[in-house]
Image (tube, rainbow, N blue to C red; front, side, top):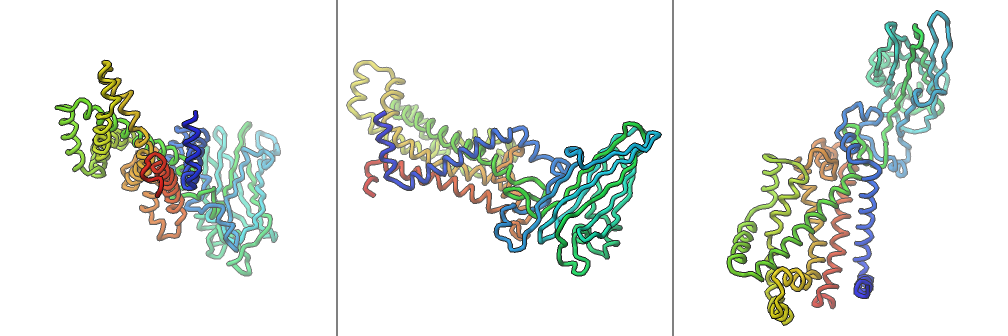
Length: 446
């Protein structure tokens, strides 16, 4: 306990280490929240979902906090559903099995910009006679605009923004603009309370329908949406545990195994040392990234397969030479000779006396290695060689590049995962450099 207390006392002398620990702590909290808030199966299902899964989400919407910086406030998504709010629907029995079912959607619209899209979704139940609905739009200034009349099936989608007949009635203006525009100045929005009145008629006992109105905003969620309407927040959240677990497992796994192999090579010498050296020489001339690309193309893009190859190549990397030189010095120490004299086994000498002597050097080393493996996983994902199931930061960057996000003004799509990658690397780097000064006496005065 005294050693630990002394370590933290020394750590306080390095503000960069405190800042690095704070960043890492925030990332760990974010990773834990992601795992519990959005379970793995749900995250994969959402991220790989089609347009039906994300039907209520606008396409390429910016984060809602952008409104803090806009002089003219842009709309966020408005979602009204009679199935979830029965007060929106009224039923009048007409006798003979017929009923009048009316749905009234009323909402306040006080934004300066027009919505990006408008859609109406119906679900109905009946035996043979299909319900019929008549849809009317009422503006704050009292104008009534007839929209459509249709017979419903079990499931209907009325994409109002693509209704050419409605657009013609609005003098050629797109419905998402014409329904909200001032008739005297089409470039301005009429603010106030809007209504959509759906007058429905059902022809059978027990027949019914529900409607859902979605007025898609230009802003949505904390991180915005992508070209497939997916909420980018999911990938930002789940990218955190993926990046941290990949980086930590690769760094710790390769560092520990490398240290054990180096200790065994020094202790046993002979053919053991020769074999490990020859493997090390071969691995050092092998390019890591091209090998991982080949594994992803010809074998598996699973993150666990990639992680296994990374660790396998990492344990015979250049660091094994550094550990070997340290263990050569440790082997000549007096307490090693004493342990050998009283008959300690080779395993005990390696794991009880040699490795603990080098562990203080190992800790800063594997901490500073974590960012390189985090960026490696992101690089593979950017090259479209990441795990196809997981939503990650690299996947976001790959999608943003393929869709030309920077050229179309969707810079948030690139900046958010890039900032998280930089913060993760910065946190581990600042902590690792401080630990190196603490554990390496030669650097303490620098």
